[in-house]
Amino acid sequence: MVLHSDIDLLNPPKEFDQRRHKRKRLVQSPNSFFMDVKCQGCFNITTVFSHSQSVVLCGSCSAVLCTPTGGKARLTEGCSFRKKAD
Image (cartoon, rainbow, N blue to C red):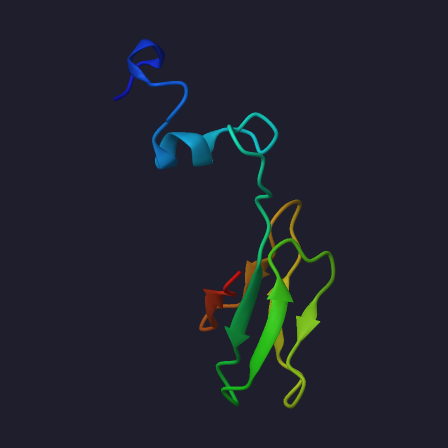
């Protein structure tokens, strides 16, 4: 466990900085990201926003890939994903 008095404020550890609020980090960065989601039925890859506010369907087989929640979208069981590169 890291105490607040033991942290170098000019160079905080990456895991400590990621837990902070997005506006209180040393360099502001968003919590959201785009990801490639693979459908478990047809293995088609679809790009999905991590905080999408609507149900995302597969383009070819119309299977539900993710459903919205209050914050991040919840992926359907069996779907795999990876973050898009910057």
